Image 1 (spheres, rainbow, N blue to C red):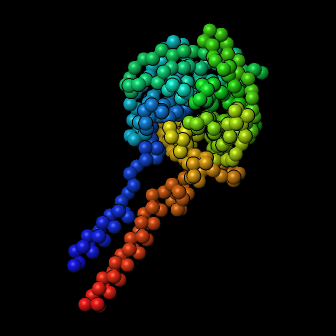
Image 2: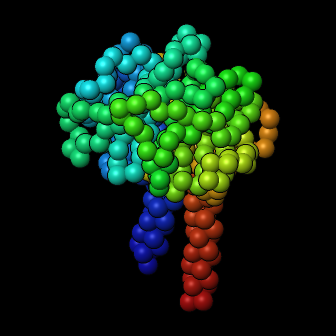
Image 3: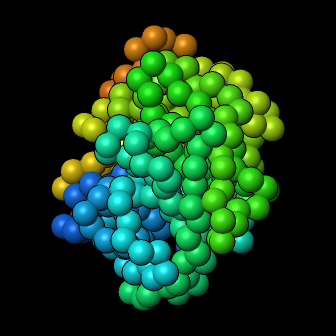
Length: 327
């Protein structure tokens, strides 16, 4: 009669200590040696687990589709119809799986008379190919400025840009429909205080805005563009933090950085039931929290499983002893 008990115990132990399967958005390293200045990040909604990125400047009109399961580039898109990009800083996915690229950086400190936005369809097949994009000329009401953050509302398709100022910047709204033949004037609609914005992202339902800087991030209720700050977010320390995107399901935020073989790391999204939100003033990373029993770590699951197995084994052992005594 010992064999059933042994089999049951072995099954319980295997279940408790099995390592959970890797989540598609558990983080990854960008392996492509061509990508040394990843400055924007956008989760594909058409291709699960794929993230679009691009280099900062001096690279050309290229977009890279990176598979989060391997970190490898699975498609390189060459844009035509856009001239020579100057300072590509942002990428966003809009309605109908369109990719919007922000050539909006201004390394001259905000002196260029205009910047550009490019729009193209996300390819249905992930392979190296050339795609013709639509180019839009953009100016800001109030004069030129440096910016690295562009978002496209997932429901309306309207385009927004956040400028980059250490003392706090502004959120600019583009026309309801951009013109490819004229100049598109973006107008300020809201303040973004105390944050030198390096990227921004809208949740897939369009209700939450996250704006990040090199070492911190803030969450906002979108509120029709009249944004309301809801709190500071924990950001993993990755070096020069340049990018952020919601995952396709909206449950997580993926943070990226510049550099060769740069990492992309996740944090729970605001209101997702996780613990990435914080009211602390530091805004620094919380990657160590998972190792201390936080919601993000597999170690906590293993410890919980081990305790459960110990309790079950104790009960089974006690029951076995009682059966022997009753004979």
